[in-house]
Each structure stands twice: as C-alpha cells, then as structure tokens.
Length: 318
Length: 250
Image (cartoon, rainbow over all chains, first blue to last red):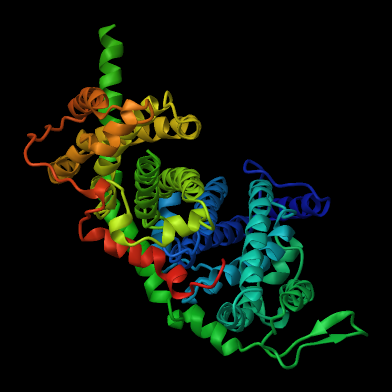
C-alpha cells in the first residue's frame, strides 16, 4: 500500500515537473484507463465524423471542393488510425475498441449525430466543429501522455488547414447569391449551439475533470475552452456578415470576454442518450461497413497465412 | 481535328471523373480504415487527373468555359467515359475487379500516351503515370488476395469478373476519333495495348486462381455518349447543386 502510494506520489511529481509519460513508464491504473477511454473515444469520433461530411463528397459543387472534401475526410480516417495506435501503446486492442463502438458501449463525439442537409453544413463543420475540436486539441498537444501528445501535434496541423477550408466555403457562400447567403446563415443557426456543447458540461457538472487536470491530461477546464472558442469565433462570424443565433451574446468590457446565453443542456444529454437525428444512422453505417467488410478481412488474413506457409516451404526447400 | 481532339480529351477526362465519383462513394464505408484511405487516394488521383483534363477541354472550348462548367453542365449524351467506370460499385470485390480491369488498361494507355504528339496530353500523362502505376499494382494485389483468399472471396470475385467482362471490350475498340488522332500521332493505338492488357490480365488472373471469362458479346457506346442507366443517377447526384443554382459560384 505504502509502496503504491509512493509510486503514485512519484508519478504526480514527475507529471508536475512537466515530463512526458511514455508507454513503458509506471502509471496509475486509473490514469491508463482514463487515457484509453479518452483516446479511443477520440479515435471513434474521427471515424464516425467521416460520415456527415462523406455525405457530400458525391455532391460537392465544384471539382476543387470535391477534391478538398475527399482529402479532408481521408485525413480523418488517418487521425483515427494514429489515435487507435496511441491507445494501443496503453495495452488496448484496436479490434476490441472497434467492437465497443459497434455495440454502442463506447461513445464518440455527439456532434456527429447532427445531420448535414446542405452544402453549407460542410463549411460550418469545418469552421465551427473543427474550430472547437482544435481548441481542445491544441491543449492536448501538451497532454502528459507522450504518444497522445505527439499524435495531437500532427492532427492539429491538419485540423487547422481543415478549419480554414471550412471558413473559406462559408465566405464564398456569404458573398454569393442571396440563396447561398441564406444557406450559410441557416447552417450557422443549426451548428452554433451544438459546437458550444462540444466542450462538454459546465465545470461544476464535470466530475472527472479535476483528476484529469491534476494528471495534466487536460490543461484547461471545459468552460475556459468554451469561452476561448467563443471569443475567437465571434469576430469571424462578424467578418462573414452572419449573425450568431444568441440574443444574449455581448462583449463584456469588464471581463474582457463575450457573455453568452444559456446552453440547452437537455438537448446535449438527449443526443448523448441516442436521441439525436442521426445517432442510429451513424452507428448503423459503421456496423454495416464492418459487417460487409468481414469477408474481405477474412480473405486478406487467409491469403497472408497461405503466403507465409509458401515462404516457409520455399525456405526449407532451399 | 479540333472537334476530335476535344472529344478525345473528354473521353479521358470523363473516365477519370466518373470513376473518381464512383470511388468517392466508398469513403467512410470501406472494409477497414487502411483500405478506406487507400481507395480514397485512388479516387483523389482520378479526380486530380480529371481536373487537368477538364481544364484542357475548357481551354479548347474557349470562351467562358471552365473546368467545372465542362465537368458539371453537360447532358448525359455528351459524357464520353467508357461504360465500365459508370457501373455500380457493388461489394468490395466487384469494385476491386472493376478497378483492376480499368487500372491495367489505364496503365498501358497512359504509358503509350507519354509519346503523344499533343504536348498537353503528353504532359498530363507524365504527371498521371506514376499514380496509375501504383493503382494498377494495388488493384492487382487485391485481386490476387481475394481470388486466392477464402472460398467465399474466390467465388465473389469470380462472379464479379464474369459480370464485368462484357464491359471491357469497349476499352479497345477504335472508332473514327481514335483513328484520325492516331494518324496524327496524338492518340493511343488500342490494338497494341490490348495485347499488353491480355498478357497482364492473364498473368494476374492466374496468380489469383481465377478463370478468365470467355470473350463473348461486348457492350459498347459509352465513348460515343450512349450510356447505361447508371450514368444518369451518377450525374443527377453530381450535378444537382450547380444545376439548381446556375448563377452561383462555389
């Protein structure tokens, strides 16, 4: 017991000294579990997050936009892979993690349960959803677990590129025909509040945050990150000439921040519970891809085994 | 000559565009993430090639034509892709078989186009050939893996191969456009690449333990704008925004 406490104290001191924890280092079991949960959820979010945007690849309105969108969704698949690998360094198995997603045991970011009915949603996702993700991920570049932090550095670079692309889509729409401008405004109306919810519950309702902060997995609270995002995003919305759907939004000189209205947490918890417009559709799409790919994965394994046997035979014959 | 060069450019451009469009449907739905990424890469290469060719076609058309106007705003009968690329994706095996048959053709086609007398097509071929070499290798590897994988995978790809075979004849049929441009040293001699294609296809099918279907009736018409029922839906999806908002830029 005492020895364990000593290890934990030493671990805390190590983390407090701004050192990175590496896969082979001793770490508290709860630290490991928290990270596996967080990183695998993050990986699932990248993979499920491909779906609402892939919805527009075949309908992107120009060749340039089509190529950029396809490349972006492909990047997300790549992010999923880095993150599954980062989780594997903690002893998790990728296929188990995927099973947890497919059976509904593991969560992914709720934002992807919202639909993308118009082309402007592709702009809004890039600008707002990727923007909110970046706020979180920039912080995670300094997270205490080495492999996660390094994956984040790579991911952040690509994400900022995606965010600029999204903003540029909306800029083109906002400066376009009245119908295009309306499309952009409508997308902002629908994505604004869900984007703010991406930072998670308010600090007084986020019970696990304190421990994560102590271990420097997280470095800023949900409310801090949310405020940063709002402060950064409002001028961008103004520049687009679009209005943010919050009548209570106003600059607070004294705080040096924007004040904003009350988030509808009931909606947040309903979507988490599975009641968003696309929860069932997203999970089904992943389940179907997995099920329809089963014979392909089996064939690839069977072929690899045959090849290994052939190589061994050649070797013994020689 | 001018009209023929434009049609030839569109044939190449539309092959790349429609195949890229079809492959784009897979994104997010592949059998495993690594292969989702690989197939998206091929789709991206096809779309990249489509852009170069559409830009060239737009320049030939002159006036206010742009790559997007050429790519998005033609009626079905003015698309000149071969029928093979517009067919449905089907399962992963069918997509692989279609890809293998087309990539192998495309590899020999673009290798020959490297010596085209048309500078622009020659330059485009130079950029595209590296990508296409990789595509042909990738799809051949997958065909072997599936053909020589499990009993189920073998049956599935053999069935797809039998189904898709009748759409391959068109790849090698020379018409007046091909003949006229071949005489100018611009076009590829399809009879020559047919020999190379046959040899490569036989080699890979044998490694994949698959049986080459008998050459029977071959479908044709895509190059001349006579399409299957599938293309209309591909275009309806692809064209819907530019058609709905003709005044808009994106």
